[in-house]
Length: 340
Image (tube, rainbow, N blue to C red):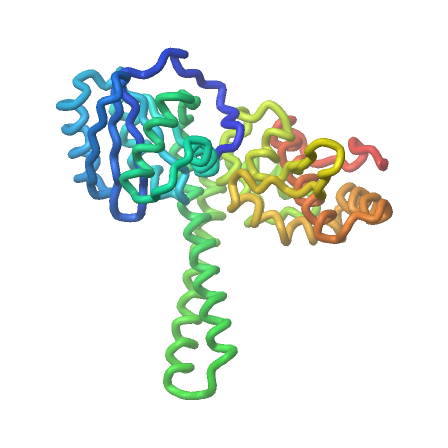
């Protein structure tokens, strides 16, 4: 649920909300800041669970009375925000989920110096009141379930890799044996979850169809396809492949000032970091086995581009191809792509 340009075709009313509610989220708590149009501020801290959500509604009913006058804003925070965002949408509130970098930039513009959970919630409320961000588009249930599974898989793999690294530095003994048992458990859980992801895709016709389109692209396997679908979400919310690439933070950012300051273009990295990181190894594979990506990379290398710059461009090209097959509904066809 990370957003850069927030391409959803949804709109706000265009009028400043009577109340703006900023929510700073973490794994186990939510800090709330309710700001009225007149500037009156109320804050509260609740638990990030169903009990806390009910407390939030009761607090709002006493403070704002009419839910339709409240615009809620949360930062995308790795999934911690999704449960409360979904709860509030189902309760009838207007909800926006925005990129944390937007809030950070707004805070810097406001010369914000202190950083606490409460002050962050207040900043989010002020951002919501001033900027009136577009509303969050709730993902379909099967897509939310897929995202939970793929993100859980990524977390398991990170823990497995950390365990492997620790084992590499350990001598034989009881501690090493215990960690080897833990590692074996991780491996078993990863294999089981990968099977569950495959079964989930098979169970839902549209996800299965989209998975088959993606794996028609050389360099994209079944697991990569599942991760792309989970993080990219509903493809219709993007008007172009460039918007999809911007969502992943794969568009280049340029820095020029006057006639003397010109820095090398770099990936913006203002977007869904999970999607961006996930494309790293598939892009390397595509540079070897996908003729379209391979020719594209060779052309950039011939122009003197550095290898990491070329890899970033290959990641963007691969995501463009993913967008293309999903948008057109047709399998990958290399003949449709120019050789230059």
